Length: 274
Length: 296
Image (cartoon, rainbow over all chains, first blue to last red; front, top):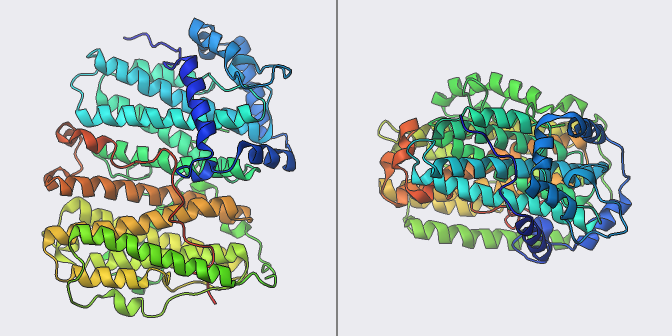
C-alpha cells in the first residue's frame, strides 16, 4: 500500500504565478466571468451584506479539525505546505492579520465560499498529481494515453480554478488558500490508498469532480457578489464535463446519473460540501 | 411538468415515462422546489420588454450564430444540399419578446429547449442516428438527451408559470433558419457526413444552452429559478463534452471507439482525454440575449 503524500504537488511559486496570471486574465476577453477588474469584485463585496453563513460555521468546524486532528495537520506540518501557508498571498496587505492554515480560516460570506472553493480545487490538484505520480511509477498497471491526457489537462484546469478563487481572495487583501479541503482530505487519503488501477483512480476522480460541481451549483445560488457568482457558474459546467469524460472512460453512460447508472436530467446536490 | 407528448416520437414515449420518475428524484435531489417559487406575478416595469437595443442585439446574435453554424456545417460537408426538413413546420412560428427579466430569461431557456427537442427528434428519424444500423451509443445519447431537454423545458415553463408568466412553447427564433437550413442539408448527406452534421448542429445548440444558463445564473433574481437553471447548465455542458468527443472520434475515422466499455479506454487516442473540455472556464460569448426567446 502506498503511503500518500499530502503536500500539494504544486509549489508556492506556482500558486503565486497562477494567481498573478489570473489577475492579468481579468482583463482578457477569453475569461468572461473574470473580465471585469478586481476592483469591481471588491466593490461588489462591499455593497453586498457580509452575511455570517453556515459556511462560516463550517470553516470554524474545519478549524477544529485543524487544531485536533489528522489529515490537514499532516498537510500543514509538511514543510512545503506549512511554509506556503505562512508566505502565500504575497499580494495581501501586511497590515491585515494573515489567515491561519493556508488562508482558509477567519473568513465569512463570499470570501469564505471562495476559500472553500480554492481548497476543493487544491484537493483535486492533489488527487490528480498523486494519481499521475502513481501511474508514472507503474503502480496502477497499464496507463492508456487518453487517461494521461485527461489527468494532466484536468489538473491544469483545477489549478486555474484555484488561482481564480485565490485571485479574488488576494484582491480582497486576504491570503491565498494553499491547503486542501479539510473535511474531505482524510476521506480522499483513505480512498487513494486503496487505488490499485486506473479504474479505481477514475472512480475517485469522479467523486471529486461531482463533489466540486455540486458544491459550485449550490454556491452559485447563494453567493452575493456578481463576480463570485459568475466564477462559480463558469467553473461548475467544466467540472461536470470532466465527470462526463470519466464516466465514458469507465464505460458508463457519459452524463450525470443516479447510483444505478440511470441518466439524470437535473444535476443533484447531495454531494455538495456545506 | 410533463412535456408535450407530441414532441416525442412514439418509440420515445416509454423512455420518457421511465425517465419521468428519475426526473422527479433528481429534482428532489437538487433541492429545487418549484412550489417555493412565488405565486404572485412579477410586476412588469415599463421598458422591461424588448428594447430597440435588445432587438438589435438579438439580430446581431442571430446573424453571428448563423455564420458560426454555417461554418461548422460547411466543414461537415452538409450545407447546400436541397431538401425538406421535418423541423420546418415545428419551427414555422418562432418566439419573440416581453415580460419581466426573470420571466424572459426562463422563457428564452424554454425556447432553446424546444429547439433542442425538435432537433434531436428530427435527427432520430435519420437512419444513421435513430435507425437499426445506427451507432448504439449515439442513438441512445440522442434519445436520452432529447428526453432530458423535454424535462428541462418543462422545468423552465413551470418556473415561468410560478412567476406569473406565459409558458413558452415555441423555439428560439434566432436559430430557426439556421436549424432549418442544416436539416435540409442533412436529408441529402451521406451517413458519415450526416452524422457529423447532426453532431455539429447539436453541439452548437448545447453550447448555446449551457452558455445562456451560465449567464442566467448570474442574472436571475428569483432564488428557485436560479436553482433550476443551475441544475441544468452543467447537464448541457456534459452533452457538449460528449458530442465533442464523439465528433473527434468520427473525424479520426474511428467510429468503433464510440462505445461504452471499460476496456475501450485502452484504445482511445491521447487527444480523446481532453477534447471534451477545451476551456477551464465555460465561455459565455454564445449566450442568448435575455429576451430573445421570450413570449411577446
